[in-house]
Image (cartoon, rainbow, N blue to C red; front, side, top):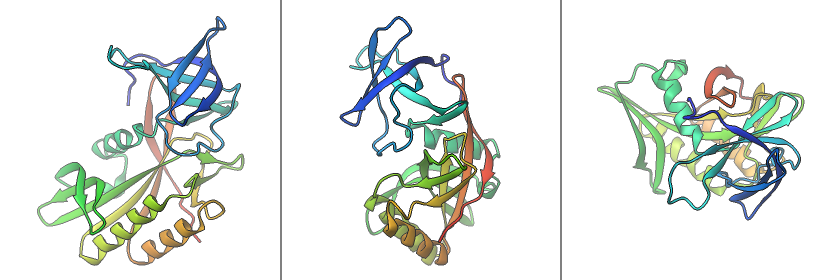
Length: 235
């Protein structure tokens, strides 16, 4: 995924009210960034760290700047814009990067499904098979390379796991794909220390046939792309 223009950088001052962040430019002035991330942003919401932002040409936007990346440690970049995850995954599927999701003739996004009225991120289809793909963006990582999802309690995430398990019971294929926008993460696990119920639900979903994969992004101010599969460790 190539940015229309290379991202510009600033120093994070603070994130507040969930969707706002102040950042300081090189000349000392302060700008307000839109923060497109509803999670806790644990570990990637660090004042005085360098951030990169995009600029929109849409004159109707109240905030023209969008926070995209933060450097949490020297040369360790994290993509905080959760809206990018589905675009990254679709691009990786279409370019053949995600080997497990090849061989389908059509791709549809945001398709309604399930008894709990969810919308699947991607429905892959061929004449004789279908695959439901739910994408989760991973940004919580430790210095030892361990990544976690979620970074806050997520009842919505548990619902998605139940829906995916039901898909398998009905004879289709179901995949949970962790989109890892963190250059320091080498493996992913459920964050049982944050949301133990999600960790249990993930294990149960896998036992019922839901497939789980993680793919890691390479990030820069010019582009972001998924390039490498990394292990998923469960309970």
